[in-house]
Image 1 (cartoon, helix red, strand yellow):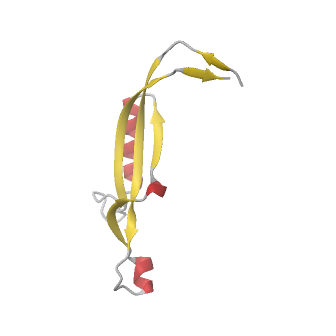
Image 2: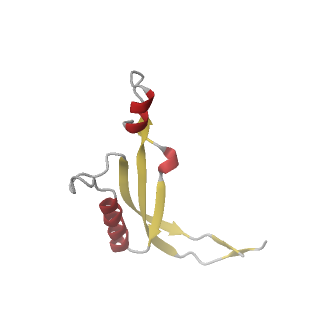
Image 3: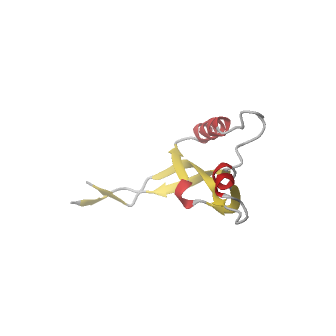
Amino acid sequence: MHVKSQETQMLVKYYVWTGDYDLYYEHSMDEDDLLSHPVPSRDIDDRTIKTRPFNTEAEAIKFANEYLAKRRDDNNEDQVDPWLAFIEIKKCTVEVIHKIK
């Protein structure tokens, strides 16, 4: 593998981060209730954290809005899924130092 130095080019990327709350189980619940009505904790489940890069802020916001629309409660269109922990749109500057061929 050859490492080739490259001119530095500043890239701006917009990342949409999403995640779900971790599950918290009441010890007093029986097994059937636990399966049908788990309670979200204040912690975020690391296994559900996802990120997706976009080239423009508009694309990131459009994706986030569509993602939220999919997770709305069917019975109440204004109610977002209570298991959704967060959606963040982050603007990141990336500096390319080396290109590996």
